[in-house]
Length: 494
Ligand code: BES
Ligand code: MN
Ligand code: ZN
Image 1 (cartoon, protein in one colour):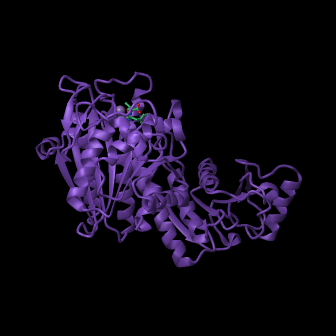
Image 2 (cartoon, helix red, strand yellow):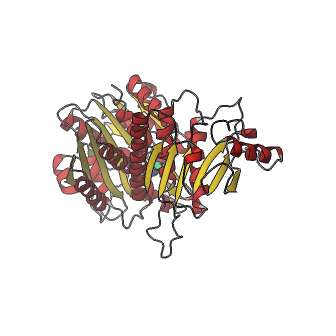
Image 3 (tube, helix red, strand yellow):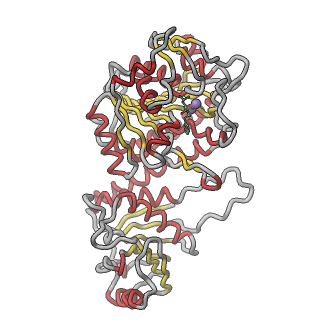
């Protein structure tokens, strides 16, 4: 697929489909198309054929005043008094893509100058339009014997009067982030029999082959054990598939890189504290945090971004075999602190704590952000819309929230007060790995905070946002790659 941005007048466009999104009563029509075409559209509005309501699609073949084969009008559902918000704008791109995919078009253009998200400039619109448009092309058909035929479109143009050079960069960034998201989705959608820690390690090495600027190091489970990663190994030891720690080095590792640490549980059965059967298949996406580290690194590589980032993925399969960890087992973490494992299903924090200690010891990072499908409680608290954001540093939390607001990939803060810490007390070890029924998302973060005392650290709980659940809708979302990429490009909270 080719993507381009230009400021060509729509009457000079020579593509199969031109898409224009119109508010109620076509109030944002001026400037989008020449007078003759406007007259046709106004007649359609007057006749009641087009109202501009949300998701309305109307196609004009051989439209008056234009060279394009089709003019596709899409309703935004917005009127002058209710400005378009970021989320509505990004959803619109999905409809634009769908409308064109439903035609025989090979080339298409989307005119975006008549859309204005409050507080955002033209360059932002180019970036988000290209990102969401490219992301909407994603399909996962790897295991379908007869996949539905792919849409014929191979060329997309975004039409905007944004400054030419800045628009070109914005388009490049949008497409790069979409590519990163596609990798994240591929990994999280992949079935757990074909996506286990060794495979993730292979995928990481393949990425380093593709991008010479990227270096990858792998730590095997045996090496992790020798190094003293007792918590990581407690999770990995119950599976035939060995655990792996994967390290991405992008940029200068001596310059206090930003660290991204991803939970990579390639399947979470719960271990001996076995999960109920219904919906357990979806626990293949318990490596969504890891997948978002892969995707963000890929986006940065695509952009040749001048940043220093270390990505660390703690990959293990949480299975209940004869050598699995028991509830009551006490392990020693890489930090030296001991943990009483009361519930083997609270495994994410166990693999993460050793990864967090390691990345701090080895890289002296300027900031540490971990990304994890950590708690079901976060799905209950925030649903599918916002990542849970917890941090020991207010500025860092702010930078993450801003990056989310700027991309529509939003997070929301939860408190990390000391008051919650006592829920992790254990009579036998330094810490217990669960904190009871109350505030499960926060106590999980409290657990991690015990291992990040010296760092500026934040935690993203993406249990609700990395995946769409249920039936035929089941799919990875590619989140929070847009947030993370923006965060890093904007200086990683410094
Ligand atoms: N991977 C799960 C969390 C999860 C649940 C992610 C639902 C996505 C959707 C995690 O490992 C887990 O099992 N957490 C437990 C913690 C509990 C035992 C303290 C949970 O949330 O129930
Ligand atoms: Mn679990
Ligand atoms: Zn898990």
